[in-house]
Image 1: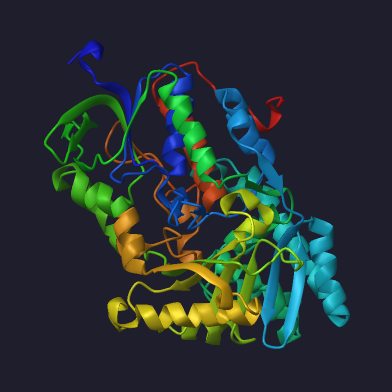
Image 2: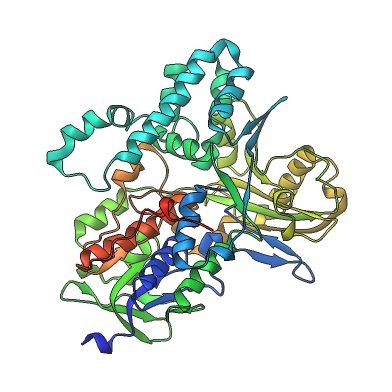
Length: 506
């Protein structure tokens, strides 16, 4: 088959942020890109939806605050779609609420640390030391090359001693090293919700990197993060690419060890030089690629890895005026000062931890005048031992009760409410177990222990947060950049993507 017989240079499976970013950048370099999305809408977990009699409410189910405006803005500027997204800066990081206690943390690195110190002055030295170590580990990890050869290991350890020292440490391990007061530890540990596992399980390296990035330069996107999704899609189609929704891929044909394109649910075959899979690795290698093309060692490694938990989601609108309250964009609430107990409660469906986002306060465009919308998320296992259909209403009422506790009177003026279980998350994403964080974010699943974008099948790359680039929306975006560069490098092309943070923005 010649180049002219191909339907595309690159086929992207899934329209998550990583796949669309890679596709847009490759289209920019002149590749013909086709994106195949099994759902009716784009974006994966970044897909927003409209509700209400007139579609007046816009809900983002997963992504509410972003970090690194220079990176996002630089990519959009290069692609010519920067004007499609209006960034709304946030001066708040989050409010942490524990029994009889609340604290507001700013999106400012120094202010973030000193707010903790002011709350627990007797632990000032330890608190400053802990957060400084978080920054140090983040900096060392950031400076580490994407690929590390064994011969370079000694030099890497010398350059990043703290990253290697704590590579097997949990968040609890490092908190114990620096801080004695259990309450001070609990307040410092609140962002473990970003990882989905409590301090005793959470990888310190991942916690350090996520919190460091998010204590500076936080922003939302006016109209919801889906504006970013559509900007990237426009960057593909404006350069001759195609976006196909309701288009489920059922196979990746392989011959002579090389991916040749995709087969769709209706039997249509699309031929391409490269395939980028945004599907989870289990779908990719247990369903889409025939077993004989995947080394058994690779499959065994996947089988030993644990996927993350899922989430129960509540979407609500009310006429209660929230604008009079000084609320941050993120509110983390905990049923206990003991994070392990809160997590245990959550694991059986009692929702000991909740993540509340009053979206319309920072971005009024997502709700009609005189109303506000709130998204409430409770991390939870896929299986809590009881069918979700039997407990969905009870869980919905529990979260509504929590909203009324935090926002008194919210449910008195409800105008809309809807909830979603992990089964909905699974159906929408096709991720195994409705996983929202890809792999479980423990020391056993840090970046170097995850599958790399390069797979055992030639011309098939993984492009998602399931790869060694790591989990979170920011890292998924970066995964798209890195996967595009890997494809260019392996193609022997001279194209080198720029330092996007240095791209001048209007």
